[in-house]
Image (cartoon, rainbow, N blue to C red; front, side, top):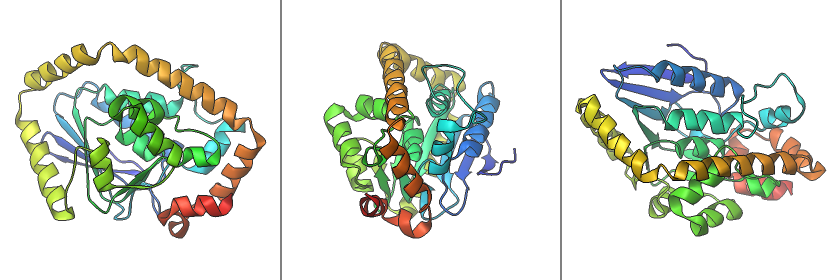
Length: 276
């Protein structure tokens, strides 16, 4: 499998996928399409037990969704859309990955914000380094995380902490993310690779039926939450559409689209504050 924004390599029953969209690893429509394609190829793949997501960029896991594509989505009819009115393309993408039978592991060593964090929240397990930084900066620009992030964050870490993460728009360290339950645990760079590689190999050794059995139990436990999750997605999507109608939101997004570079992205909260 060859993609423009993803590096894919196989190690037995483990598929390693590294985001590779330099210089910032921005998630864009190209990457979304490639992730949909890869997801589709895995839906009935019995040879792959584990998918490990990492980054080819030592500084950025995924910076966030490309603001230029967000702006395009408002007025360009050629932009890809979800086939469902209540669910947008990023929500559909994260859901497609969430329900795959393979075990999905996110390995973060760097900056992971916005759409990148929303995608990460759809993984089964998530690990990071102390140096990693996480954030959902959308509300500081007059919109909200609407790729499933607002809903999943509230369901996974509780509404009080989710409000803090979303409404503060600040960066959270890897240690804070672990304390809040955004990631499973934090490990040093050397230990992160060793631990997650060992974990992936151990999971890949388990019989497929055993993995499926565990998954089925979790589905039974949390099955009632599915309706709530999709209701949350519909609310996210509706709120985003309404908020994007405000002239101030469009003006702010245009400003941010002009400063998507490494220097400004390293301290995005400060860049946003300076633009307001």
